[in-house]
Image (cartoon, rainbow, N blue to C red; front, side, top):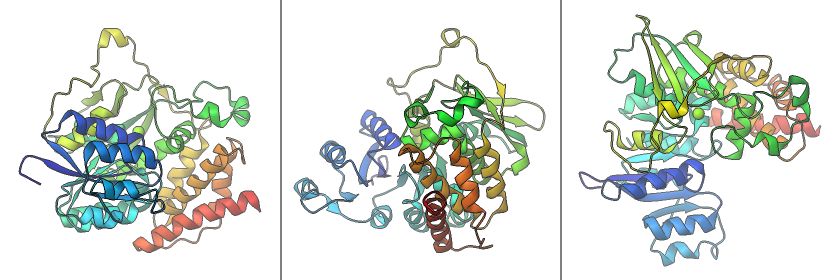
Amino acid sequence: MGDNVKGLAILGSTGSIGTQTLDVVRAFPDDLRVVALAARRSLELLEKQVEEFRPRLVSCHGTSEEKAFLASNGCVDCSMDEIVRDPEVDLVVTATAGDVALGPTFTAINAGRDIALANKETVVMAGAMVTSRAREMGVQLLPLDSEPNAIWQCIRGEDKKISRLMITASGGAFRDTPLEKLADVSPEQALKHPTWSMGAKITVDSATMMNKAFEVIEARWLFDVPWEDIEVVVHPQSIIHSMVDFVDGSVKAQLSPPDMHLPIQYALFYPNRVYNENIRRFNPTETGTLTFEEFDHERYPCFSQALDYAKRGGTWPAALSGADDTAVELFLTKKIGFLEIAKVIREALARHHNIEDPSLQDIVAAGEWGRNQVRKVVEG
Ligand code: MG
């Protein structure tokens, strides 16, 4: 792309982060340009996006009739791997669900493209590998997710004398549900997140706090902070998106109303801050009280369980991610209850054979193994 225009490839353009990324692009037509879009489903929405943003490359699933709009809009139909290697792409936004972007993310890093990272699975499954490869290639991994984005903003300009990271958690849909009632909560109830509007998988992951475990794993790898120096604190208002406690006792926090447009924009324009009239401002007197609560481990068994697997390294975190994927899907389709999510993941992973120093293929295979194993546990 030209000197001043940043060329974007957005993987997962029809999802929650993808559409909000395009909102930011829409506000800055002179600075950002969509070179490529990828989406698996939601072809109708993709077609609208293609008409509006005129990408040159598109990757999607569908029959040739379903994909006819691509040719009529002058788009080339290609794979995500081809998209991320395109020379006009400066920054790849990985906003897909699950692990479909794992391979393309490595392709992008190997091609020297910076990554705006929204997809957690990539770092959860392959954190050690993805961060070391990015360092070798001089590629920036720019976190889009609000909590690691907040930490990133707090440590900017610091020489990393970090004593601990404090990741905030809203508490999810069932923060105040009596423990004895959790067995009977429905998918519909789980999908009502108190402060954020997101996709179904991540909203259930927020209710179980699997999402928060994933964010701890992300922070471990993205900021190279030891496990024991990362804490989670419940902050129901979701105004403080995370805090960093430095060695001298000074704590920095990043505050803003719960709206993903801001962390997305920060990552797209980094290292610059830009004004966007569409982004809601923080008003302290209107917000009133900010509260904090200790994390309740009994309420969220998925959390400690997930971190236990993640700390083992190897293919454990990939198997965990795959297992969670299916467990959430089975909960959403009412095959298992809410409290069974943690249980079926535990039962499945009890049979995992770890690979110590895995290749990318081993990691992908372990994710697939985790998915299948949970299905076996539930369906016998
Ligand atoms: Mg988050």
